[in-house]
Amino acid sequence: MRPDRALGAALLVLLLGLLAEARSARAVGLVADLSHRLIAITTAFAGTEVLLFGALEEPGSEVVVLVKGPPADQAVRRKSRIGPIWLNTREVTFKGTPTYLALAASKPLEQLVPPAERARYQLGPEHLPLEPIGAVGTSERELAEFRAALIRNKQRQGLWAADLGKVAFLGDRLFRTTLFFPANVPPGTYQVQVLEVRNGVVTSAQSSALAISKVGLEANLSNFARQQPALYGLAAILIAIGAGWGASLVFERR
Image: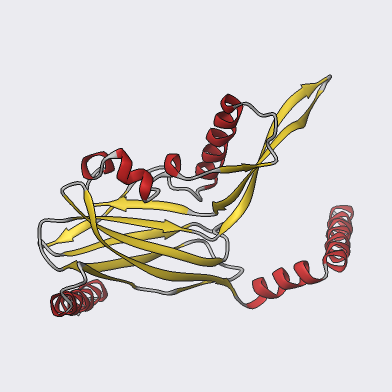
């Protein structure tokens, strides 16, 4: 059997098992799972995909998937020209902002849920409660500009998905989608939330945890940089000097 057919058959078995579980647990409107619960970041990590699959208890509903990375304070800086150079002259920090954000749905969000529901479940960057820190004296117009800049920066980095992913149905109850995590995804615990939507209302939800962790040499270097920053900086300088000296010898011999 071809590998892709074998994978498809295994996925179908898993989905049928989830459907049976959903039928046996009437209090649960949906059941979903991930193909991986741990993503290992190594020195060769170039991004990866995780398959999310699940089953609805009853047909006729739509599905929305929301993925959030661990929260962290995010600074946005504004540059101004002072004389011949550009300098950072303003800064606003937003508290507890998701480091990663992605959405997928079986239909466009505006067709599934009204604005109030989208705001309630924070479906999209525009619905995140971006709370500024130390922004005393900053006008609402300026804060709106900094929020827009934060969204642009995150989307440019590929950490906040600019496009809505597609949740595909296999029949009227089984569904799946593929979640992509880029090479620069930060480590931590990610929350994957699956929402069942019927007639514009979220009727059930399930949340799963996904761990992204550095391993091997990548983890050792990260721990060394965090625990011994002075030595790490000195080692980086020595390596840079050694690389430059070695390159100069090569060119001299030529």
